Length: 322
Image (cartoon, rainbow, N blue to C red; front, side, top):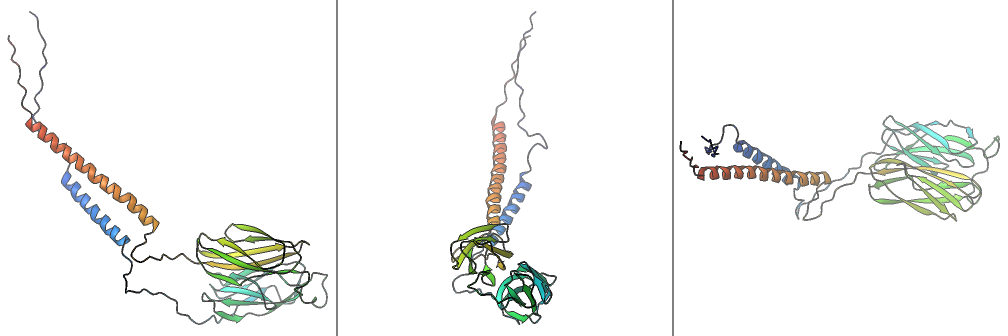
């Protein structure tokens, strides 16, 4: 007797096995909650600018100018120097700007630290120099003058009296510029005027901007000129200018530059969003849409599978003759 082996199909019950289906109701509530949060975040970030007829104003009310004067503690009075520039330091009202003058000529500027001190290098004139420091507040209001420190720059061996006062038509090389630069914003180019007094052409200049950048400039005459620079970040910077003439004379000047934070100015009928907010929205909304699409695809696929299993007819089982 020969046994024949035959295959028969197993009949599927058409029922889902427990705990193998997805809980779509909690997922739906979760997606709804996330969608509401995104809508609120987007609407608050893209709030409309003031409409026509509404005016927003901001300003600063001038206060009293500084009442405390700076004090020059170094160099000492009647001190003689054989080289220039020389360090000038002292005390000052905290968070003010300090400008130093030599014989009533601007010599340099710097910021007063939170500890109430200042320090900068000052290029001296030949002979006697009467050094005076003056403080200014953020509104450029001047305070009282400091004590006067009289020092001497001895280009020749030290003498009993001061050398002849500086003649700007003579040989000494002197630089001059504005005392301080305010109202500068990041990403905006600004210019510094530099005046050349004395010396002999041609001249070479090295301008150090205080942000690890410098610029080399050559001049074939002693006429005033301008140099340009753009700061990337807000802050207070010390600009150092050093010049050399054809005979090797050297002049030095330091000046402060205050770079303000860049304000955002919305245009009429539109709103300006920060780049970080725009980047977040560009990422979050596509992710949220993709999550909805994935959940919907699984739900539709499961429903379709149920319908197909419910419509499938039982497969007849063949009866074998013994």
